[in-house]
Amino acid sequence: MINVTELRPGNSFEYEGNVYSCIDIALNKTAMAKMKVKVKSKNLRTGNVLDLSFIGGDKIELIHLDKKKMQYLYDSGDALVFMDQNTYDQIEISKERMKWECNFLKGNEEVQVVFYGDEIMGISLPTTVALEVNECEPAVRGDTVNKAMKEAVTETGFKVRVPLFISAGEVIIVRTDNGEYDGRQQK
Image (cartoon, rainbow, N blue to C red; front, side):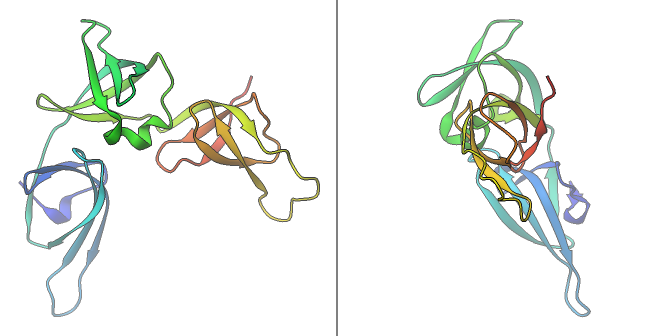
């Protein structure tokens, strides 16, 4: 058990029977009141992001999540199928819990599947992924007043804003935390 003020982004903790991952923490201390702690967290069982409120002296229990490298095989319709490359065991994770992650998954990709005990929590994405642009709007000549961007659709169906010089067939780097363009892959 640790004091809630010691929580840091990336820490996982258990609170009221649910398992959370800390995204951000804000401490607010006024003169006569106790410290208020707001923790922006993701419920690892449901995928919902919510704000939890604590008082400075509250205790929470940090937990350890296990990660196992597995290969993403395919989308079975209502679930995503992953395979352990050592034992060839296959597991399915509901697409309902993996809405955001589906935007960055390509077939036969190696990912980290996150476990809490025997329970599957989801997958851990890398910071950035390389995705091929399938289609994008043509650049409009003279439309460069500010940081001019246009919409592109990647091979996974994810829509992202890219600079005007990007064209279909190019491979771009996309951030998995916010879904923004981060650069293009050199050939």
